[in-house]
Length: 213
Ligand SMILES: C[S@@+](CC[C@H](N)C(=O)[O-])C[C@H]1O[C@@H](n2cnc3c(N)ncnc32)[C@H](O)[C@@H]1O
Image (tube, rainbow, N blue to C red):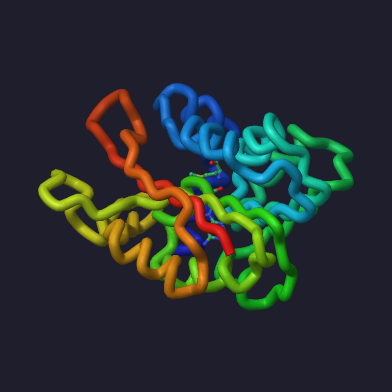
């Protein structure tokens, strides 16, 4: 089984308990997003949610601003079924069951706002995703995403790749390299923070970027 199939089958199996797991783990990514949205756009035409999963990011964004249209992209049908359960008959949400790389390559859609929360650590080529996002973002639009930073001296996060049986591997990028790549693709970095992603258990650091075109 290839990497993408492993990710897909892992999340298909995990979909029913995913929201509970996020809650129990105390993952702080949604709080970081919520805070950034306070200075975020006051209106959104088209939003793209990459690795949309069960729709948590859409729910957080909607606390602050109601996008006119949302495209939710994810490889896992199980996760997307849960998203649809949360928003049944919502004509503003279009679901695309696709790999993010394929979506960004094949589609020519453009967006005013993009989110990719807890996705990048699954992508072997995160720089390609950054470039794809940048090219689909409208002028003045914002992209908010988390990634797994390489942290010198950290037990686990010191490595750019950690092999993990369930999903094959977790991929990391150094904060400097990530910021450079965002800028190299014509985006301004409005916010870049490292945060304690999970207060429970072993300390785990997340990276969060708000970029603007
Ligand atoms: C940790 S979950 C995060 C879900 C959601 N963004 C959230 O914050 O609750 C990661 C999601 O990314 C999806 N995913 C991982 N790699 C992907 C890829 N290459 N293409 C599309 N979806 C992917 C998984 O299926 C899963 O739903």
